[in-house]
Length: 279
Image (tube, rainbow, N blue to C red):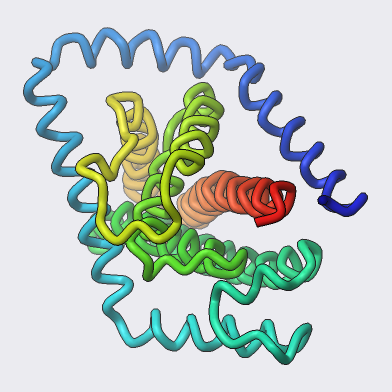
């Protein structure tokens, strides 16, 4: 049984999903997607499949690397300790689901705010046009956001150390990187998929990815950003390319905002469904 406040959040998420489903592309998006389709058709299917497999594996091993770090274990302990401010009986990640949604949202918003600062700063460094920061931009941006996706999941009481939750967090991250037109179907697919799984599942499925070839629209747009930054760096008469820094900071902040909004909405929705069923 949901409270009035929780029902309001559920309605907000439903409205957000409808907006994703009905989002009209602007002229730039239409032109970009048209040219993207032409380009992608010229690439042999076997190459596209191999590239997706390599990308999915890279995300998977990045997640394993993040979880094997001491920082990850410290973060889990920190989350539990912060939750004790609201309820002293919180002892593990799963216990956070005893808190109200508004309390969980408060904790999550603090993490999102910190992440957006990191992302903006990192984008600003990329915007300086330094070769090393340009090369490191995408891997760093994705690692920062993948880590934050896991942190958000744990704040809503879903322990990503458990294989099922680790797999889910990875898929949520991947879904958030897809174009808006595919995020709605990915969101619904993940919720439906979870409804058919056992929460105590110990092993991964063979398929731990929901990426498709449209994911590369995101990559191409980021490569365009990097090319623009390099161009602005070469054209700048100043030692510090202010315009490039602004472009990098704003672009990365916007990317993180989309990823983390999708993630928060997903875990809010999942928790509310769980509460609605009384489980």
